[in-house]
Image (cartoon, rainbow over all chains, first blue to last red; front, side):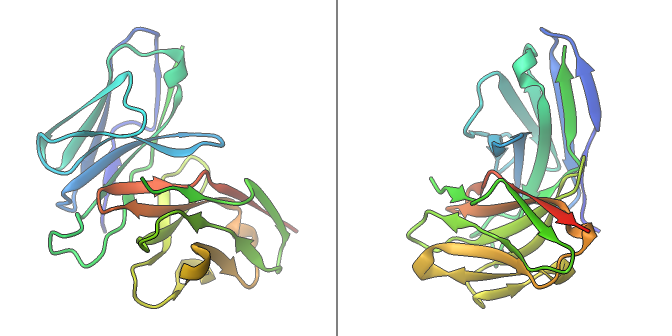
Length: 117
Length: 112
């Protein structure tokens, strides 16, 4: 059974704290993604990575950074948490089209609901 | 970049009625298209996907979707709604093989 695991389901942090959200996948996928989900806005891409130590900015990277030191792990970092970063954060992984994959789909973790107070 | 639109942020149907959730994509080149379902406080689960094979795609839980290039649409249907179908549904597109673009979501309510 394929799996994407996010380290926490719920987090409460204080304004100004440095926050780490961890994500691990066991499918040997090349691509990994961090999305933020807010009501009425759907899922918005924060960062993605298509290989170890590689990262690309998504649509809303401001206030976030990422780390991918190993293929299976992709971390999202909030350098200095603010209340407007209160949200549901979803990690996903996928195979990369053009790398022998006939098709692709995103596999999601359970999500981390972060509250910044 | 690709964009995906979903008409109707909230759809209500009676149990046993037809479910129709609308999705349109922007690309001139047919992308891969997906429908995901999200139950409360859960991640997203794939319902079905279009990958340029058959235009009518069958998925889990009795859902299906039809790819119509002329309309740039990929609407999701189910002949008879069940109470357990109440959830949020997201249409998504691959973004030129780099990542995935999601629509804003449609919340489906099923009335007894």
